[in-house]
Length: 171
Image 1 (cartoon, helix red, strand yellow):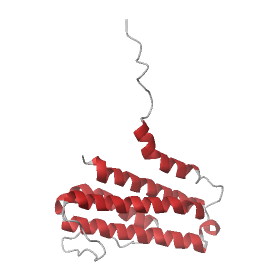
Image 2 (cartoon, rainbow, N blue to C red):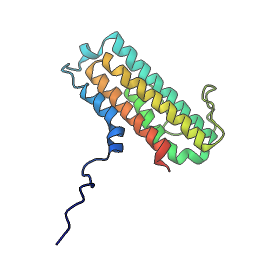
Image 3 (cartoon, rainbow, N blue to C red):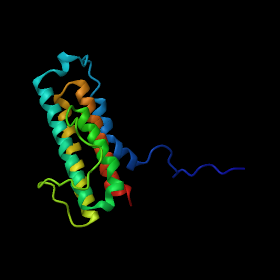
Image 4 (cartoon, rainbow, N blue to C red):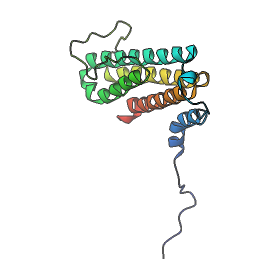
C-alpha cells in the first residue's frame, strides 16, 4: 500500500520560478490593449522615439557583447547566442539592419565598453547592463501603443533571462 504524499511536498512551480517570471508576466498582462496596432496606433512621435531608443539601446548592448568577446575569447561560446538574440532585438526595433551575427577578431571595442580583467567580472558587467536595459524597457511599457509594448515586454523578458544565464546559468 503506497504512502500518502507528505503534507510538506508542494506541487506546482517553485517560488524562485515565479519570481523569475513575475515581472514579464505582469508586464504582459498590461499589454493587451484594444488598439488595432495599425499605422495610426504606432505612428505617433512618442512611439517612434521609443522604438528608436530601444534599437539604439540594443545596438549599444551588442557593442558591449562584442567588447567582452574580443577581450575574453574564452567566453565567446557562452556569449555568442545571447549576443545574436540582442542583434535580433535591434533588428526587431528597426535598427542595425547591417549588424553582423558574428564577431570579427579585429573588432575594436568601443571606448565606453571597458571590459574587466577576469571572466566573472566581465559576465557581471554584461548582466548589469542587461538588467538595467530590461528594467528601463519595463518602465517604458505604459507610454507606448500595444504592439510596441508587447515587443518591449518580450525584449525585457529575454533580457531578464540573459541576466540569469550570465549570473547563475553557467554555475
